[in-house]
Structure formats: structure tokens, C-alpha cells
Image 1 (cartoon, rainbow, N blue to C red):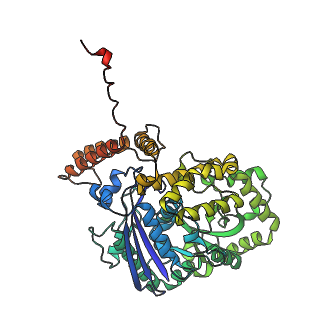
Image 2: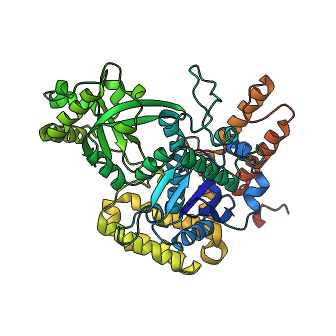
Length: 520
């Protein structure tokens, strides 16, 4: 069973933005649709939507406030829906691994649900859900099955490359997909399914290989069985190809496989000093060292690997025959000392990840297992409680986790998320007048903060963008509007002004004159 999904959001930033619409389509194993669902919610009080997002999606200011569902109630429904199916399930989307999945995880985080459970594992950690990104399948076709899809439309870059946005790919390959349907979540999902079916039918070997790559276990097994493999990577339709050999695994942050580019001779690197290897395996590997032979790939993000036997001879590196590739790969596989050395160098090259100041960005901070267990219990209690009990859980958090907060101060984000949820859903019944007043003041400060984090949308930044779009519209270079649509910018400007006024503090009243000041 597959669950295809798509999000419409207030911003391209996954953590600062908010989900406004989720389209879910369930299919059987043969990709036949058996159920579909579209969920919407209203704008959170503390979120400022970006003008570009509203213009691209066509979501109006009225729709932002008219919906009955909140992000909290919508995410509860999604969580319960996904848990109602037999696990493991396969989730899929278009560019889902880099955008939609992170957006859903962030929404689960901020609505006090477990961001890892729904898309990763069952309680016993044995049946892991699988994840497929159909855009990665399209990228794999560019390299390994160029006849499977029609990709004649190119980008406007100086070096044109296949344009692979969903609408462009769908329309070129016989999938009905109008501009009116674009950015409607369920319509996007159905187009994604149609593209997936075409790849499955016209490139079955590639389809099966990419299905083998949907879990860390599948990637690990593949690399254990193949000493020399094809590896493709790139951004959008600009794909590059390498013949590589796996060298070592780095678990310092996310599970990474260290690969060696077999266009070079590994014998030249066996005796390199540790300091040079650390430089090669640093964060900006390609920028630091010329002709760097090492690549890092995240094993859980469906890497585009292909066996040497299924790789076109045209893709082999110039001047290196197949036997040489195999011999170089075996040299690495047989040298356990070199593998250990590369693993050590990769660990030494890891830079400590700074703790983000913004609580929305603190999703990926690791907590000790015992703290995570107690936090999980608190979250479950919050989900099961009524609104008065949720308010008490919020207020009692700092006492309950007093010792933990000393060692892990980022835990303070959880009662703040709880306060946001309560303020949006049941403020009159659960929050004191003083708490409501303080929270409104906090929202206004956040919306108008001149020192807000770089990627967080604020009202002043929204007005700046509207002014820039007016200039571009006059010059005929605006990507979002056409001549005659200036009124849309005026409507958005009015919306942002109303948003600011909604939470602005009341003007101070002049003191009333005392009786002694009255004239006689």
C-alpha cells in the first residue's frame, strides 16, 4: 500500500512556514487509487504567510481565516489516519524528501506529536515505513533511462537542463494537469501517481532498483553486494554521474555512506596523512580540495545507485575500463585499515552543529533516551487531555522537567508550543486574561521583529516583497503576476495591515483628571 501526499504551505521554509492544505491519496500495491482525502486548516496566529506563496497557491486572505480546522486538529486527524492503516506503509510525494516530509515532521513537532513515529518506525522498531520520492525517480531516468520520459522542455539557465517541476513533467508525458489544478494538493498527488506509473511501466528495472533504495537496510545490503556502483546526484534536472565504491559509514549526525570516486586510483590515497583526509571529508568537501574523490550520501534519502551491470558503458569515466573499476573497488574492499582510517577522518571532520535560537528550528536536536521517554509520555498526556488539563500540563512543564531543563534548555520549546496550541484553540476557557494579553504581545513582537531570523517571514518583510513585486510588475519581469493584476498586491497589503492591527497593543489612554484638578 502507498500513501501519496502533497502540502500547500505559507512559505518555502519548512519550519517557519505553516501547512495550509494536505492532499492524501491511498493506492494499492499496483498504484490504483482506493481513497483520497483533502484537509485544510486556517492560519496560525503567530505565522506570517509569504506573498509569493499566497500568489503561487492562489490561497486568498479569506481562506486563511475561514477554515474551521486548526493546524493542531488537522495534524491529529492526519496522525490518526496514517496509524489506522496496516504498517509498514510506503509514503511518497514529489520532491517530498526535501520539502513535504520535513514540513510534516516540523508540523508534528510543533503540535506536540512524535515527528519520527508516523514516517519512520513502529513501536518495536522492526517494521520501518518506506519512502519514495517520485522526483528522484525522474532524476534517475535522466541518467539511466532517458527514453522512459519525455523531458524536452529545458530550463532558462545559462546551461539548459531538463525542467522537472511536476507540472512540466506531467504535461509532457500525457498527464492531464492544468494551470488551474496546479498547487491544489490532491491534484498534485494524482499527477505524481501518474508519473510514477509511467516510470514503473516504461523503466521497470530502474523502478525496482529505486524501490530497493527506500530504506537504509536496502541501501546497506546493496552496497555490501556490489563493490563498484553507479552513483548519480544533482539539483533539479542538472544530474552528474560517478562510478564509486563504498568505503565507510559515518554515524556522527545522519547515517552517511562515504564513497570513493573510481575515476581516481585509491592507491594514491592509502597513505595520505590524516590531516589531508580530514580536509577532504569536511563539510565543504568539493570547495576545499581540488579533485576530491570522496562523496557523502545520506542512506535514508533514496540515493540513486545502480549496479555496474545495469549502467550504460557511456557513463563510465573516460580512460577507465570496467576491469580497472572493479580492481580499484576490490582494493578498497580488501583494505580494512583504509576503511577504518576514512571512518575516523569523517568523524574528525564533523563540525558541531550549533543549537538554533528559533524554537521552530530545534526539531533535530538529539535528547538523551531517558529524557525523550519522559517527554514522549508528556506529549501523549497532552494529546489525550481536555483543554483545561492541557493548560495544566503546559504550566507544570518547568516543574516536571526542572532537572532536565538545566541540562537541555531547548526543552523549553515544548510548553511554548503548548501555549500556541491552547491560544489558538481554546484561549477563553483555559488562559487567564493576563496570559492572553502577554501572548498577543508576543505574537505582535514576533510579527514585526526587525531582528527576526533570516528566513522567518515578518510583516515588514512581506511589505518589502510587495513593493519589489510592484516594481517588477511595472517592468514586466514579475514571475507571480501579470499586467492588470495589481489589485492582488493591494489586497495582500491590506491583509498584512489587518494582521498587524489584530495583535497590536491597545494605545495607552490619557489619565483622567482628578477631582482636585477640576475648576471651581
